[in-house]
Length: 92
Image (tube, rainbow, N blue to C red):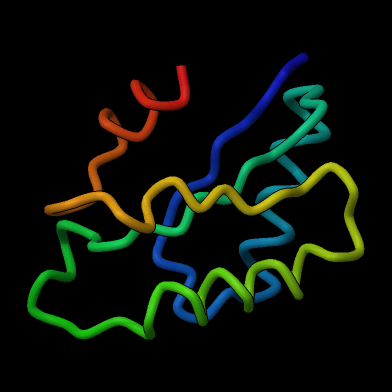
């Protein structure tokens, strides 16, 4: 199975996120795209994001029409900033 990982703040999720993910899915011949909302983005530590559960719910609603898309909430309880290298290591 070919899986793509799309991480970000998604605050809020918008159509540009969905278009990019679908293009990557099609061109990369991916079976699935996991959207991974960051708990604490390292480049936005001075900002207060919308609470994680709200962003995850927004994502779930936005992705509901596409069976190849799913929300992965693994970052929810991660301490410290969310770095891609840590996310990919945990997913592996």
